Length: 507
Image (tube, rainbow, N blue to C red; front, side, top):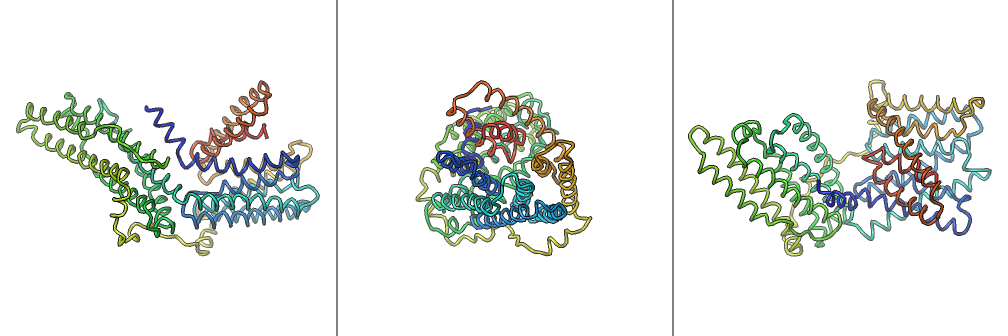
C-alpha cells in the first residue's frame, strides 16, 4: 500500500476540508468569548454553530444554503418550544411525540433533511430540561440563534471566496474511486485470485461510484457559478468530469472471462505484467484525483508510453512463441484486453494534457453542449410523499414510531429521581444517535459507540492526567475535533472516540 498517497487522499478530501471549517467556526468564537471571560454565559453560541454545521451536506450551493436556513428555523423553533413547556410534563410528552414523528419522517426527502431532522431531535434533548437556558430563556435562545446564523454566514463567505472548491474535490474523489476500482480489476490478473471475493468488491465499488457520480453531477451541473460562468476554471472542471465519466465507461466495459484467462496463461508472466501495469494506471488516476482535491496541476508519475510498449512487447513475444490453432481464440481475447488497456492509457494521457494546457483545452469545450443530458433527475419536495409514508407499511413511518417510543421511554426513566440517573439529554441524544432505520445498522452503531466511548475515555484520562500545559491541550482539542468531523460520515468508531471522549472532557 502506498501510505503517502493514502495520507494525501485523506488530508485533501472534502471531509477534512469541511471538518477544518466546522472546527474553526466553532472554536474561534469560544476563544474570543473565553478571552473576555463570558464563555460559560454564551456557551450556546458555539453549540448552535456546531449543530448547524453538522447538517451541511455536499451538494449545489442553493440546496446547501436552503438546508442550512431550514435547519436554523427548525432548531430555534424546537429550542423555543422545549424551553417554554419544560415544566409542564404532559406538554413535554406531547412535544416528544410531535417532534419525534415529524423530524424522523422528513428523512423521506433524502439525507440532507434526514440530518436536519436528527439534529433537531438532539436540540430538543439539549433544551428539554432547561439546564442550559437558565432563568432568561429568550436571551439564551437569542444567543443560540446567533450561533446558528454564524455558521450560515461562514458558509456564504467561504463559498463566495472558493466557489469551485467543493466541485473540484468531488471530481477528484471520483478519480480516486475509479483508481480503487481499477486496482480491484487488476487483482483478477494476479496469481491465484479469489474470484468470488473480487466479484463482491467490484459490485460494491460500482454502487459507490454510481452514488458519488450522482452527487458530483448534481453539484457541478446545478451550481450556477460552475455551469454558466465562461471561465477557464469552470469549463476545465466540466471537462474533467466528462473525462471521468468516459474513463468510468471504459473501465466498466473491460470485462473478460478471468477464470479462462488464468487457465490459459496462468503459467506465464503476461497476466502478472498486466496486473502490474493496471496498478501503474491506478496510481496515475490517484495522482490526478489528489491534484484535483488540492487544486494543483497534475504531472505524470510514470512514462506510460514506455510501460505500455513493454507490455505489448511481452504479449507479442509470448504470442509468437506459443500461438497455435488450439489457443488462437485465447490470444485474441488477450489482445482485446490489451486494446482496452491502450484506450484507458490514452484517456489518462488526455486528462494530463488538460492539466498541462488547461486554457487551450478548456476553451475548446463546446459552449453548445447540452448539459441537460448529464443532469440528474430533479426531485422536488412534495407533501404527498410525506403523506403517503404515514402508514405502517412504510419503513420510514415504522422507524419514526420506534424512535419516538424510545425517546418517550428514555425521558420517562429520567424522571425517576430514585434511580439517580440525571442528565436527561444524554439518554435522548444517545437514542437519536444510535437508533437507525435498519436493525443491523442500529446494532453496529451501538457496539461502535460503546467501543469508541471506552477507548476514548481511557485515552482522554491519560491525556488529562499527564498533560497540564494548556497550549498542548488546546492543540489536541483542535486536532480531535477535526478528526471527529472528518470520520463522522464513514468511520463512526473513530468519530465517537475523538468527539465523545477527547473533545468533551477538555471543553
